[in-house]
Length: 143
Image (cartoon, rainbow, N blue to C red; front, side, top):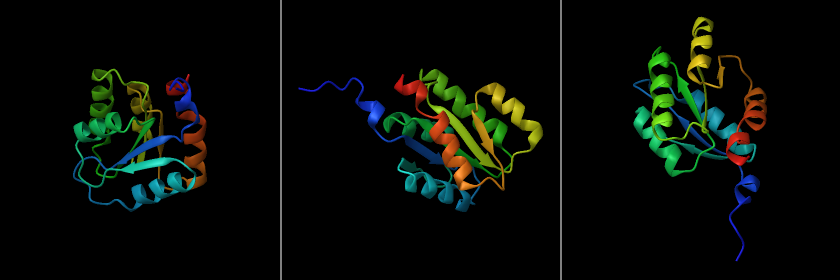
């Protein structure tokens, strides 16, 4: 019988794409989810109005390599912090958190300090996002 050791390294990246909070605008999240899927990644889109608890539970259940959050509501500091905190509580800090949306440049440093790996703002191309995910996701979990 073959061992599972190392088999994860050849599997496609698994990315949870989520819309936390009350924001009902999900077109951008769906476009990113499709671009990641078309690039060969396994994408789990959670849908609208997800709580941080639901998002982290999905990421854990799906053995995700990353969580991509789309936040347009202005609640990014609170929502990202809660997701990062829940991952720490679950000893799952190797799951990369990145996001995008209407996020002021002034908040990007604070988000990075709390553990958000990257923030994409309006104007980011799908090529840029896919390239970043390929270069920055999975290395911690596959090492």
